Length: 277
Image 1: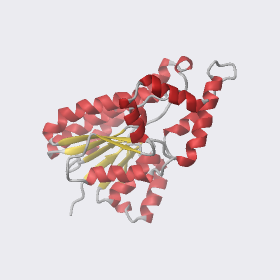
Image 2: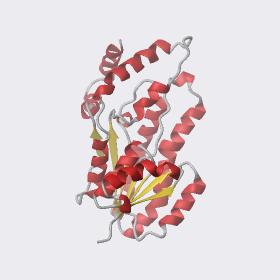
Image 3: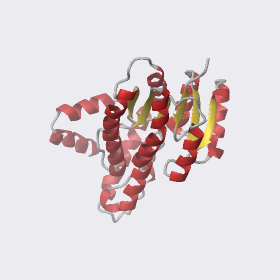
Image 4: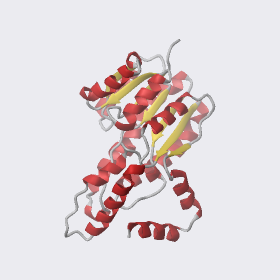
């Protein structure tokens, strides 16, 4: 039986690597893309443990490079179908707006938003030709909720959410589903970028950042296992029924989304600042 083809971007580590493994285990032939294919050793090491190495191939793809995307598109033309696309590649730039450059924001959007649009545009014609498909975009709780110190990341994920809503309505007549996965805090995820932020003691935001980093550090023990997210991606990719638009996952994620929907923002602010005291 011919396996369906699934593409995963940003597959060298984190959610991407785990999604490749779960999809291969779930019966897909997985094209694992990464900017530097020399970093594929860990992926194949794990694949051998679950006997799924024959169902995984690695292809070079820099999602921010037009030339790289063009070369990848040529590769896609040799496939009999493109059934699943997991737009996972992403970065997180942390810091306070006043102390970040506009280029920091551009870099964040180039990877987390414009790259998703570019890969989507490259893959869509093949999905339409195949008569359908499923696009799974890796968003975040930050796509629903803006946290202090992460405005570039939160803005890029909010943009991804709006794009995905519109895209779902555009491509549904062609049998193509668009899905958002919205993880909270996980052990491989983006919160680790906050640890790497260095702020001068003379910065007006120094004490604020110290409080944020202290709170994040205290919560790390409660971060979920990233395998949960990969399993959800494989489930959504495999299910026969039409998937929902959004799949929030992780501790308190659904609660936080509901709080924002039903409580006054002023009350939510008070809860955040009370926690940071």
